[in-house]
Length: 424
Image 1 (cartoon, rainbow, N blue to C red):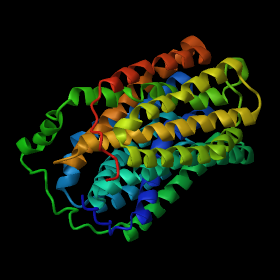
Image 2: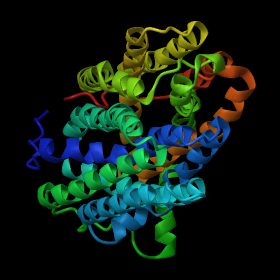
Image 3: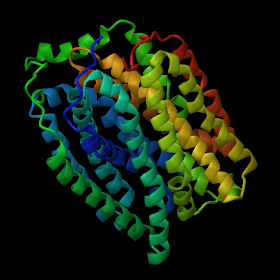
């Protein structure tokens, strides 16, 4: 078989920054907003429920994903929406001093979520257009690692910075206002950078795979649900991250809550140090190793090992909740295990979505896959706070361990092309 031609699009110039930027709105919703509202005195129940609801744009984004193919160029969507998200971040900062800050901040976060979800459609479609299939699989570890690096930048650097600002100003509203203004600046710079470096693709905007008639618009969805084995595939997409979805909203409250309430009693600075130290190295190792192993051995061979490794962090958090260690080194080591496991295991999930999206309308079909992924994160997260407040942190993480079983069952039913993801 002839070797595929090399990509002329210099992917190292734009893939790391594009997917780092893609992760920032995600970390703002899943982690920064959680810690911010915790510092501002909002209950765990309200935090888990109301910061899960803005996942809805990521769930329903397939409804407008064909429009990203139909209107304009994906490059233009990417750059324009990065400016919009930057403005949204700045607006969040302005809402925090208000008496009814919770309602106003959530309203702006909803706007940010819609803009970010649309940005994700364009970015993923641009990635699929710009790279040949063998490079798509090879760079999946890079893009997933950069996405997770932005998560750690938020959980680590920005949370630690919020602790320093909190000590400096004595005001949680001022501290977090500074954090969101910094995010706004980063996103505006990202828009300027990508305006210069994103390649101009001949296929971007030239291929209108989605005609403008209503019947052809809905045919995009019909062709997705007509794929062989799509029912099992959707079940897998919904359940693979079920345990993570439950844990995600309560990890930071668990680490920040005092020991009398079952938490570990960390400060913002300690939490940021733990995630931003060894967590970064563990994430890099997990994501890059996962991408390399799939490119070498294929998705089918690596799926089960990655599934197993991804669920190890759940057991780690159960042990943390049971024994409540006081040494920051021990806690940091546990968080490093978490980051490695999620970085390694999530790579398989992303490659599987690429496999499902192959063929006609791949941009829209990949968006549909990520919509099911977001739904699988949103629904469990909405009720995680109620569960934790009912059974405590140790009981909560025990239930999260039980929640890993459906993902194993769904994985057992999958049929995966043995050659997919493997470098030929």
